Length: 226
Image (cartoon, rainbow, N blue to C red; front, top):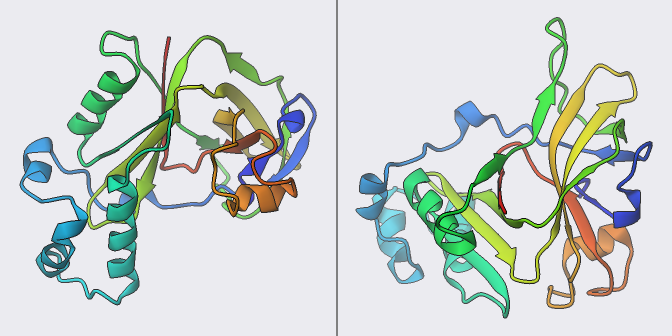
């Protein structure tokens, strides 16, 4: 909820309430090797087999999340949409290269939270201020990869042929003790989005009528290339 913002907020001095979810990376499901992942089917039609394989009940929260992840990864993309799911680091990297340029010079961007050594990171809701003017990465292609709920690491990666604007941002809490650096993305064309998308409600705008910008959780990855 606190990750979305309007594009006119993207400037030096703007203050926004933001919640960067902890998602302890050490407790997340592991990344499989390509060899391991390729041995496990990854399709809706094999859901019952997969639930049995991982000893997960169909009606449990984990079982329902698996079903939703498989559905999202296997549906056909919208017109102009670029999408795939990576089930291993190797497959994700290959698919990124196939999607935004095999010979491209790829750059990985993630959200990083930093505090002085004597302090602990606070994952509560904070007011953050843009302490530098956001730096736009011009003339690039990008894919955002979001970690999905599944027994092992699965990343849902997507972008759009019409592009999005990508920025590097530098944010600091009111007390100055916590700094966040990382990517922010503005989707300029939301005309094909679901009219019930939560971003429209958060920003209080007419569905599909305005750009939507957002930050990224700590376990997400943004790939960019020229």
